[in-house]
Amino acid sequence: MNEQPILSLNGVSKSYSGKAGDTTEVLSGIDLEVREGEFIAILGFSGAGKTTLISAIAGLVEPDAGEILLKGVPIDGPSKDRGLVFQSYSLFPWLTVEQNVALAVDAVHKDKTKAQRAALVKQKVELVGLGHAMDRKPAQLSGGMRQRVAVARALAMEPEILLLDEPLSALDALTRAKLQDEIERIRKEERRTIILVTNDVDEALLLADRVAVLTPAPAARIGQIFDVGIKRPRDREALNDDAAYQALRRTIVAYLGGLNDEAASIGESGIDLPNVEPLDLAPPPQAYRDAARSPVEQRYLEFYNLQKIYPTPKGPLTVVENFNLLMDKGEFISLIGHSGCGKSTVLTMAAGLNEISGGGIILENRQVDVAGPDKAVVFQAPSLMPWLTARDNVALGVERVYPHASRAERRDIVDYYLDRVGLGDAKEKLAAEMSNGMRQRVGIARAFALSPRLLLLDEPFGMLDSLTRWDLQDVLVEVWNRTKVTAIMVTHDVDEAILLADRVVMMTNGPHATIGKILNVDLPRPRDRKALLEDPRFYAYRQEVLHFLAEYDHGPAAKAA
Image (cartoon, rainbow, N blue to C red; front, side, top):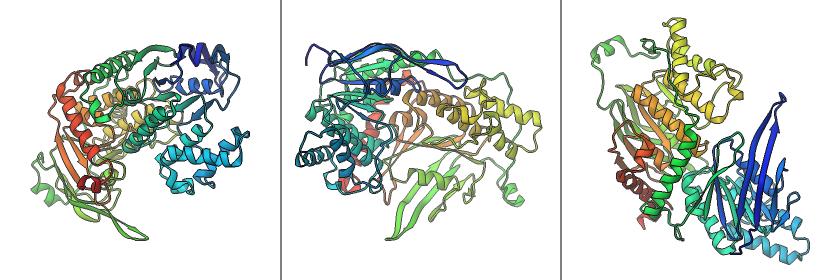
């Protein structure tokens, strides 16, 4: 590597003005030097200005102060020497993969012949593993494949620096892992200088030479830069057993946690929760209730030979089959597996939102066949009424299941749970004015406020950055510790699955998906993330889940082979 940095940021600052005339300083005095051929990961909180920073390097945003130098020369707007890949792939849907990449090549390589441009397109498309899909249109591609097209398009510009703005954050774990491998291969083969904005600590440690951490907004700056001295090639599964990786991961997580602690989010409440029971909106016959008066603790929730079949033009498709699981009252289960394995299908059937094709689900001695507030669901995208306040959104459900409580008692229930999820000062804020993290807090408060028999969580933190996700995991753990509601959580995050659950249920790949393995998590509660990272059992559990997912990386057929 050359001693002279290929990219230098000196005192870069940027502010934005709001509609009300107020000014927010997003970046404050960013200093960073990047060597040629180096891979830098920029890690930071949601809203910390990561995208503003990468856009400034790309020349799409002009800093208010400071300078950005490329090989010692100030940058002046966007240029082909900096190829940018955004979080959302922007492809022309009516053009093929080849044509989408050719657009960029034709625009920046006018000095090349038509044959040279065509060869360049073919080379870059093949580099990202899409040589077989040159003539496909975006609608015929998966999300991961579309993102590969965006990477190929950026590479086809033959930039000095490849800029990646959270390109993998919206993808499932398996697709994300595959694209991480593609990025590593590109780094090795193309020897490009790469700057990756990410919210994932593991992704940063897997790919980068150095990790630069942005402090929280406003006025974000680079708080600390960590050297990743882990030998390449880095194997995702082997890293889990690497002492250097574990130590560096603990250090970065602790540093991020320290930054996050300055704005603690788990709230206390001065309100006493009213002693009122929710109304049973679908009670069984009185004779049945009299016969089953003793509370059910064992086999509280039972999945028996559960099956889901969808009709398709090519005939019936069995998504899930022979899914058998018994849960005790108050148990927390994490459901994990690759995309398309039927996790969300099982969850929506348990919620009564999806018709059961075969077998059955029994909740507290009753068959699940309809949706109701006794089965509260928190989805990945917070489904709130945007024109209502946080308090009004939670109150909608509370008024439905507590019609017999007084108005003051219902208000106390709403306020108690909003306080507990850290929204005590934002109860009158409209959902439309909230961040994704705040909206998801409202969704969690709403679910707990219903006092459900069963809490169902469908990747509720999947759209959030790592730091907001940790924050809300702590909120969920804290509120669950108080309620001990029976819960099932679908997740792609191995750490999340272990942190939250009594058992981790691992599903085989679809179609014909079923339970492949169940891991008992014998870790004391209440659980603390920092303490877990010091516990050797945590890494043993993590390895077991990672190994299972690796076995099913290419589907059941690969495992059988």
